[in-house]
Length: 336
Image 1 (cartoon, rainbow, N blue to C red):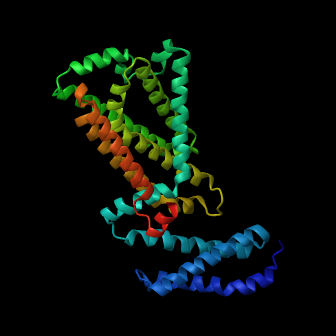
Image 2 (image 1 turned 120 degrees about the horizontal axis):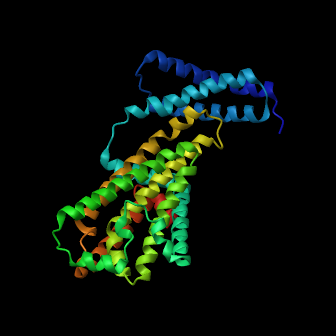
Image 3 (image 1 turned 30 degrees about the vertical axis):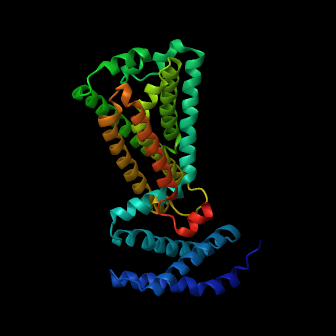
């Protein structure tokens, strides 16, 4: 495709100048609130000017005009995504019902990659223990000594403890909750290293779950394992995966694939989504910690079916919530 530069500039210049004039007017007017029609026009001009910038970068080499449009687009972008964002009142119920699940869905590719890495890690853990069981203690982190002992021994000891052994159980739950919060935070922050360590962290946690699951199933303790992990793990593990998702969103932003925006502009674009993912994962970890303290750590055998039922219901509800909550009716019908 050959771009007739003179004709293109003559045709599009009025739109660039109109957008520039609107921006100048907003700068001079301070906290001026746009009427709806003017806001629609502003957004149209922003989209059209952005498309023109892509054409100039792709098919022409007119440096001065390109820089002029880049400045306009950057300024308009800041107006749309920075200034306006701070003026929207926070509505917790709307955030829970619509914003959080919609944000998770919007970055579904990152969530799929995070989940895939976790499953690969779990498969590695199972395979490593199946090949050489004697190496089990080499894979278990030192902060989890209870996972090093034979599962049937631990189950026998746990089932004999009093139901109200509060201090030991809740101290252990607090330790696990702190560990998982660190893991989730590290998975997010590691995205600034282009996602390499984000994937490594998710793989490592998947490996640990694979090791533990295989160990307990091999020793015939599948019911105990499910009743122990499912009540809190049905929320805790997805929260860690959300941490990986946020880290991968950061990594994608660092690479800047498919956009001509500068790094600061790219991060301004995803800043709100990252804050939403971080807040959502944090709330999920808090809830998982509460469940773990008051439910998961009680190992009365006659209580197992109730724990498993609660965990299964919770996991199903979470999946439906993230997949469907806040969708418009037309979108829901289309998915169905």
